[in-house]
Length: 118
Length: 118
DNA sequence: GATTAAGTTAGCCTTGTGGCTCAGTATCCG
DNA sequence: CGGATACTGAGCCACAAGGCTAACTTAATC
Image 1 (cartoon, chains in turn purple, yellow, red, cyan):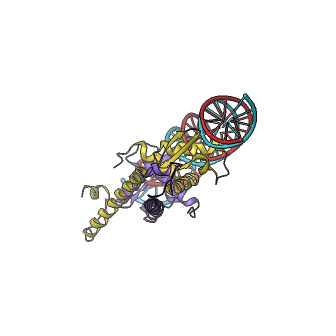
Image 2 (image 1 turned 60 degrees about the vertical axis):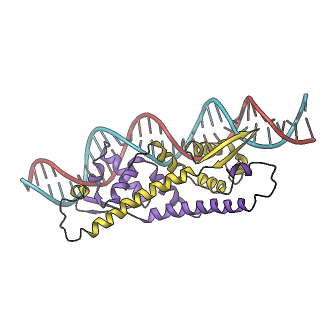
Image 3 (image 1 turned 60 degrees about the horizontal axis):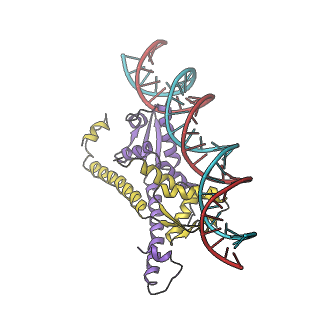
């Protein structure tokens, strides 16, 4: 565990903002230019661009400029990173549940553990 | 979409820090006291406690103090929140792939807006 | 070739985050 | 009772995040 370095920090931090999550939602439906993406938000463009750059540097999207238009595309990779982490956590959890099942008959006076079974 | 308010912000932001992710990993294996959790980290206790409180206020863990020991327990709820969001995004993505399949022959100059009506 | 459109750069400002120390408080142990 | 243990609270600090405006750079369009 914790073998992903900075990457996970960035991937998750990118999700910790409603603007960025909404952008990802829209990009899920297909590529779009920066101003198309920015349109639903009140925000000034430079502010919005920071979100776009953040998403790109976290690996959630890739962008390409042709002419004066920058087009953004969703990258599925990051979804996989998140899912991998989630599965990893769930595995730890399950493994523990198994252990507890085999543990039922044991006396265990220091408490804590028993209460967690609920 | 975007019907979860602040909650998602907090849930994801809580994950955007290696210390907190590692704490969650350890709690996956069962409840633990604050100092047990803090032990692997170099950090001073008050600093560490901020992470604990953050995790708690984001709903990732719950804590209970008995005597002078505060015991922390993982809450599965937040996993579900994350998974729900992930599935939602994946759905958008899939729906789009379907649409694209039915779309191959169409010309598509003014883009995005029209496509959203579909 | 002048205007408009789409970004981009630079710089500022406020708040939040993640760390610290130092000084409590409240058990628990002997 | 007295000391150790396990937090807790207050306050400080540096830096990152997320917003702004104003000015600039490139296309595209007329």
